[in-house]
Length: 392
Ligand SMILES: Cc1cc2nc3c(=O)[nH]c(=O)nc-3n(C[C@H](O)[C@H](O)[C@H](O)COP(=O)(O)OP(=O)(O)OC[C@H]3O[C@@H](n4cnc5c(N)ncnc54)[C@H](O)[C@@H]3O)c2cc1C
Image (cartoon, rainbow, N blue to C red; front, side, top):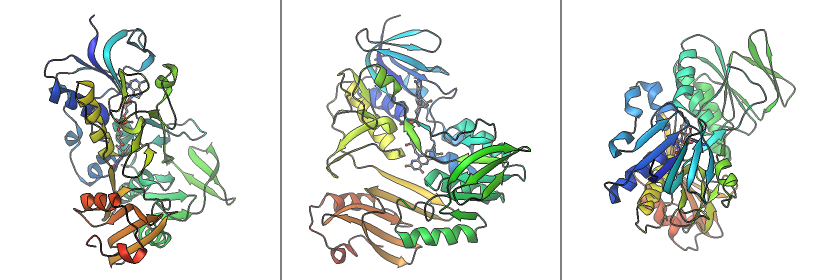
């Protein structure tokens, strides 16, 4: 068969955004999409939020088919041959391409126990399984206090389930939020009925009498029928490595989203790109980046010359609280909080070298572009200068 003009490996939000981007430029080129998942591309963020609040499942699908792309689902690509311009899938089928996009995202870090009772919350299938389990009054343990763990704990608790969070840090989101905000969240989650075991990590894991038993770093145990592991992801770089592309915390790309091979592109969670606003390379695991970078890669694959200079934002919901964050929101930076109502509504600025590096918009909406503009300002800024720069 003739090679695809554009071949996309991956079936996530980046893959869909790229197919849409290609179609903006090239109405007729043949697009192929190979995804290991059995479903066409869908939005992942609702899996841990909106679907638990009554949003219909039908709302998640991205309508990639409307681009005319040939979707081949349930097919994992196992090899890329850049010289022959082909990829091989797990059924041994060889697919030719003129331009290739690696949108392989990431896979969750695993726990040292293979069990049906452990859920890595990444896919629609994972959502369906957890949703089914949450029908029964089982004990749920969420391992990890990152944003997936925090959202899933809230979602399960909203179904009146018995939920314990085991978090090695001082609180949920402690790597992002200032210490007093993370401490507030511990109390907030407790008030909502979640058992919060902070500064307690996992030291071992076994099955006992039908339950999972986590041995913890403080010499204690946590027993649950279902474990949700929120330990972060590892970027899916295997194909890139095998193809000899440059890999360094993700697949290294230039401003055009091109890898070290000029007809192979990468975007989304898997891609490591230079960000001008922060003056550093980034690999971002968030929706805005998947959508914007995926589209940019698609435009460029189809012949445009659009640099990816976007500073992505991310967002999350924690029961009734919600936030948007832009730039480098690292709790180790100097933080300046400007609360309208303490811990309920306000803005936190993250400063380094007299510049604003990141902004957390806590229950504060419509300010993402202003936050980006502030991060782009050269400064110098003192903590007093930044207070009030964005309406809290
Ligand atoms: C539950 C959940 C909630 C989230 N909530 C938010 C949020 O509130 N806000 C936010 O900003 N971000 C959120 N995110 C993050 C956001 O969804 C991700 O950044 C985004 O999905 C990344 O898209 P991607 O396409 O780059 O990668 P992925 O979504 O990981 O998709 C990669 C795709 O490639 C496929 N694949 C991998 N390897 C191969 C191969 N060899 N062959 C074929 N196919 C392959 C995979 O099966 C998958 O379909 C959330 C993520 C999850 C899981």
